[in-house]
Length: 533
Image 1: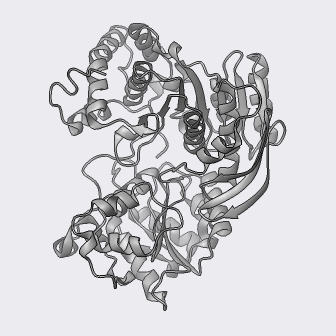
Image 2: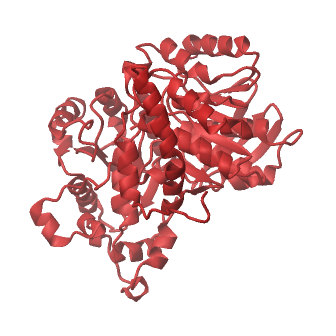
Image 3: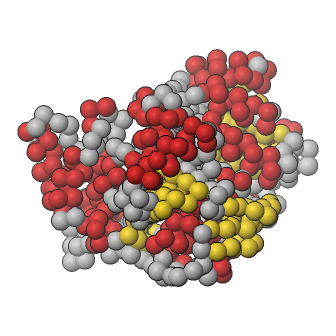
């Protein structure tokens, strides 16, 4: 970092973000190679060689697994870098050092240090008739440079999409983690699970440890992953074979489980997330951490428990409100929907759960809705802020009616209206007025989850902040306490707050004028842009 001149040009974060995010997406069949990234690393002097690497891919669960692995390494005193995607609210979220996302000034400073080099790569590619660096390649290069500059001991890096041609695959993993492989991003990765598995197997590098999660299509996928490991002389650690989850039970705020890895057995480990899939994500994260932490034998059980019991994963089955309960989930494919449904069935006892759904038009929308249909009493279809990719509410409504029936589907194109409608429906059925057994699930896309999180968590009204102080959520949001303490005048509110005081327009700070003018709920920045929206 330029300590002498941080953000020396007084650039705004908004301008820098637009500069980067206006570049071509990684969804581009003309840039399926690592030429730009390899050239960039040559120019930078190969900073990626200065730290160890945990590389994580999979159709679902890679973000959660990456965060858990980073937390375990950090608990052991290692300096960590974390690179994840997509972001929910701000692009800074993608790059973190020691568990803290980059500040605006720090992010801008990294961009200032690398943008001239990005221009050099762009010019070289233009000479060769090739595309310039995509926004994801630029962000990946920035992360690698920042990790070396920090410097970190280990970088935990989430693949953007696939693996073989992903920008992150210029890294040589010490631990290559491959979670469940299922159907998603078929237009880029292939039409079969075998083709998709071949792409994801690309992160297995010579002499690494290949950590393979549970596979929903084991007979088709495992031979491909095992062959890649054998070809690269990688040590193979498979969920259900060399590592296992056992004695799992639900607990307040998540679950506890016994995790067994090649290095040892860890009994009664608390995992601060709901769902069986998160226990298996924790298992993979623990096995990966064992590879890079310089300790012989099993890790300290107390440190592992401390790390996994404190991990917060925004937008993944995240409860951010009570009275009524509001849950956010960014999963967008069938496998994610199945995990979400199982987690809710196991961890909640809803008499009424209203879904608020906005999805991208390139997803398996009917199949996704079909998985959730048994747990949703009704669904409000809407749109998120990514107008170029989101499925119009009219189209989503037609599909939802086929799945749920006409009587269970409501259309509200604006997300704030949709959330308010869902809350009103829940309040109307809540005779006790305490929210128990009644909830709202906002889901279908990380963009949807990010938009809703911005509305409900970051701009909460004083009334809702006071309500949060009275009705603590089962799973605390990352910033609920700080938001309440920082809210001007929050401690002067009356104590008799009713759940009926919830108003999404108040949460947004828009007031009655917004209701009357039918305000669009999209944010002024293109949040959550990334491959896994």
